[in-house]
Length: 450
Image (cartoon, rainbow, N blue to C red):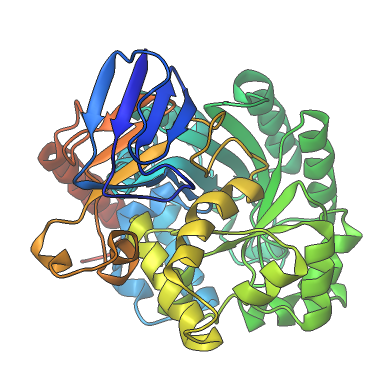
């Protein structure tokens, strides 16, 4: 099957004003203005009203948190008190609720132009042993490319950690399930549609042994590693008090400062640590909305990139961001980083790059995040003919500056997964009703009144 996406209004690619040709799951041609495909095509999509960008890559999320958006006990709190307020609620999570939450998050992401979704699921109360399997099923039904990270917590409040005992697991259980998931689901190589990574939640929720053993297990399977790092000053204080080391030093001791690792947030680094992360090629998922809502701080994106660290974007959990909209996150990142670095340093193309090529680099996936021959046919097409874009002179810049919210078309591995702004086969009203019911049941079980 050959498809010509013809003459886009604008495109984030070099010498492709005539569009691009997709054959099966790959881009095979980029056409300059006025050119036609080298060989006949089976389908032509007229893109003259569309801005075409590589499919956006969401590097960090917690799907289950779509059930606790704007949750009253957690409002107006910084990270540690916020977690302490929500852990008792999340401890009541059930499989059927996670299935709805994952589907909700994935549909939101897909509608915002996302083609590759990463989730960090670290919460395993009794009865939720197959959480990652549930998420994989939801992603397969919708056709998104995924990297699902098997998270873990082994230190409860009784052990000096933050979560209640009801949501942590024994380390042998964690490692056995990690091995199961890697063996059953992880796809290696170019074009993989589903991958597994291992992701101990944070330095204050697992032991050093679990960090080391998770790294060894992932590397045996050729999988990547992920964790939260340097999100708040509280985390730094905790690491100094318990390990006598700052978070980056602690991770280095455990063998985690390497180019098969990407971390979430990456806010509280000093200059020496930034240089070390860059030299090692550690990736960073910048989560601006979550960081601003929790008042955690600002990721030093320009400095990290200058040092050599790849940087991508993540929406983070929907209990701290309260949304799963990745194109909206592009604008947030643009605004936050430009405010700090200056108008001459950060442009709209930088923010789009973080959400595409930067995310692909963090995941070690050079075939994603770019529009070029040989790359995967993951594309997001946006219309800019609505009232909010009226008068915009540069259509590509308008995506960021004029606050685009939803894509019109999305292609994943050469297949249309969003058509006219809707996901085929998904009744959004019914899904929203199911999500509200699941959220109500979860909050009721936890004794929370909305």
